[in-house]
Image 1 (cartoon, one colour):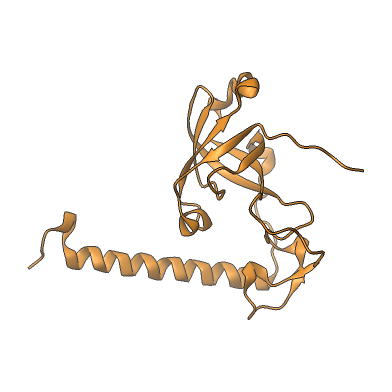
Image 2: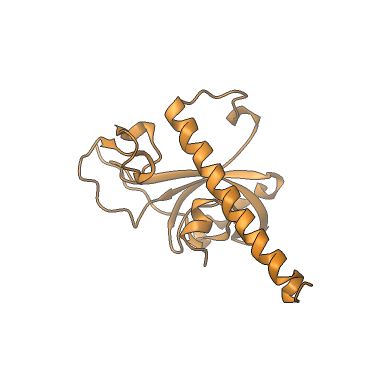
Length: 173
């Protein structure tokens, strides 16, 4: 059985890899005109799920085992236990904050998709989509802790540079 998916719009962003990876970027999705009416009443939601194609991911080579986050220092895991873009069906799902809706343009925070990425669908986030205490394996928790430490040290380094340079570039004494 095969399926044909038709994008409903595309991503517009000038964010780089790190902003996308850390989900700090503000991006836009422009919905195709023929689907614009489907956006009616969306502005009442604070968050949306965005389903999109990983259109720049290399063609899947059949490997069902991968190193999480591409880190070879970590044991290989089953592809479906990771967020790897190297998948049989290169489809991604991200929860984003809806900042605004103007016509057929959505402004979003937290979308981890590159400029030009085809958007397949949007779904509103509601209370049925949350789980109070999700369980994840220890190896996943390790990756999350390491990622938080790296982001904190980057923020600390940046704050130190800003402090040494002085606020708004003025010299400190």
